[in-house]
Length: 253
Image (cartoon, rainbow, N blue to C red):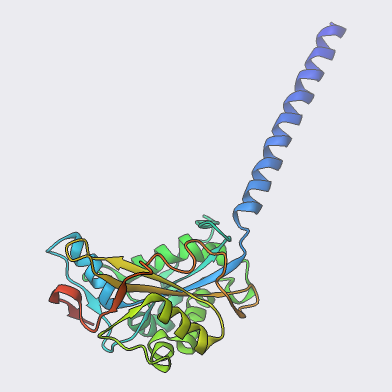
């Protein structure tokens, strides 16, 4: 009987040790999943985004802002040389009513290009994928502040103004190096440019421009982020379109 009790105690202690170890590993992985080095503020050129959406189906229409301006894609917590973290906290649900005071601004500046879609679906996606990770930053630690900060950043760093100051204007073609230099000259920091590719014509279009911030929301160089400084062909001119490529039909909002 005594031997049985000893064996049972040893088994229970072993089980407790294993369970405790698993919980510690889960906690460690959770903490690591929330770690990031930099915040990427991503703006996209709606005319290129519309082209990409239309290329998926001839039935697709686009919703574009009333003015020619860059719009927000998101604020993305990011580790150097990789993607993510993403979807950090499932216990932070998206609440559409929280964004009611910002809705009109978001509909103009943080828009879903896909016409007919519920705009809240795009904002919900950005919140779950990136916002729940960004809450580690004081200024972004809830849904309202995350989206409000995006609007503030756009107001300060709107690429339609920054590129214009560098004499980079829609309707023209540029070498990507010249665009990168132009951004750096105006902001005194290095950014990232991402292109979309027209498989039929081989033409490249400016799609996104990304600038980076540290955890105190100070502008920093984007050195070290994934695909820095560009995915564009550095030996070809890229188009900064002034209309949707292929003259695809769009819907103004």
